[in-house]
Length: 175
Image (cartoon, rainbow, N blue to C red; front, side, top):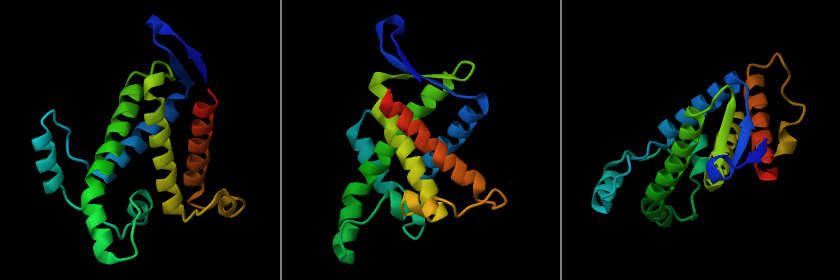
């Protein structure tokens, strides 16, 4: 990873293998389908109507529970919180993921340029992807990951992807 200023705009460059770019594209696409946020509009009334018509998220899914945790123990208060907060959270996660998709679409020979203005969206998206994989794998903290999945385990590739996403997060933060 390095920083540069093409055309006067500061960017960070991620050097990824073509296969890594494809994995990241796939994960971001899956995230967008999972979040299932309505398409944004310039008209606030259209946005409100689309949010109201959006299908509710399945809070029985451990990934949804991890990405959209409840705020209250009381079921009625929690339902009201979700009604008010969840559409915005879904839209924010989708907007961040769209920025990452745009960055990945412009990847040339494995080099992904991340404008400084987009770094926080990348960090949030990578973190959400990592949280989603952790929920699927049952990882509560990094210590619960160490040493429990061997190379013959069918989850091994997911654990490697989880660790790789952590590396990308760390690399962006360090840069």
